[in-house]
Amino acid sequence: MKTVIIKYNAGNIRSVQFALERLGVNGTVTDDHEEIMSADKVIFPGVGEASTAMQYLKERKLDAVIAGLKQPVLGICLGMQLLCKYSEENDTKCLGVFDVDVKRFQSPVENLLKIPQIGWNNITGLHSVVFEHVPENSYMYFVHSYYAALGADTVAITNYVINYSAALQKDNFYAVQFHPEKSAVAGARIIENFLNL
Image (cartoon, rainbow, N blue to C red; front, side):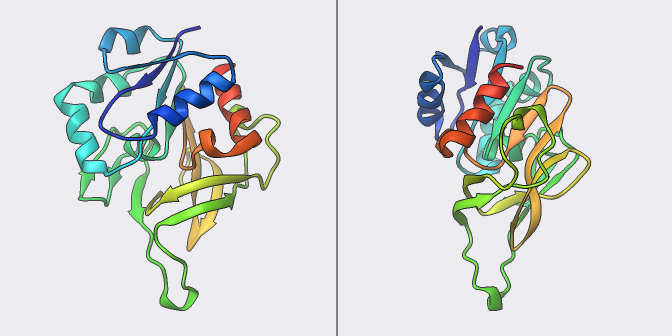
């Protein structure tokens, strides 16, 4: 099985590689169109800012490549947000795989929740094959100031300020807002389930 991690100007690629290695899988980091399109599984990670990342993808024509993939694709954190239709982060048109908008958390003063959300939070309403053997209310590691709204493609929910999409799925595209590569046993199970699709 050939597993590719898409290389672009967004961080956390090494942590994804390490998570794959712990599962006995070698992930190839590349921005080569042919390598990406010929992979059995594609991981689209990311930490950073939406408009800069989208500009980088467009310059290298990776936007069309990613949106057109037919094999299983896993978006992580910023990768998930870029698979959505639009992000409020610097007014960014994204890839449009999911018909969902990404919005900035607006924390009411009285509840004193800090933005960005950094740390562990639970996920509920799990209904996707990538959550097989992952218990309801499992805790995952999150780092983000923007969130994907709830919609038809929502397959897991988290609450921070409001309920939002912890995970999305449509056809061959799977995406999570949290970092499964940093989320202990439950996160490793999600990655393993994705690799076994």
